[in-house]
Image (tube, rainbow, N blue to C red; front, side):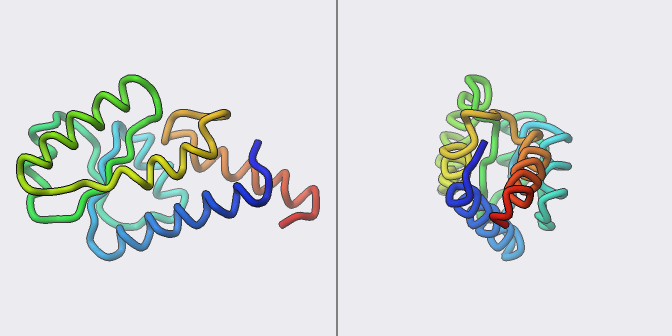
Length: 132
């Protein structure tokens, strides 16, 4: 479970994601539950659920992109494929937000769909400890 300092860093990263999304960046996730988790965290912009790498790249041409796949073998493989495809169109997708988030939470969760509930649980525990 995250301590207060790490929780603050994750929240800052979520805020950065929200700001990028508000400014027009498109977020690419693996599934519908991932999108719901981000909505629950307050991300309001365009979130595209991956159907195929080629379809996603075709839909997003000319926009900033944040790739937020799961922190597992499949998610990392999808990320690498997307980065290559976007790069071939001259787009450099942001993968740092994913790295920042999972640097702190990967001991406890690896799926984007678990993120909002996990942070709710962390907030609850920190409030009970009178830290928040």
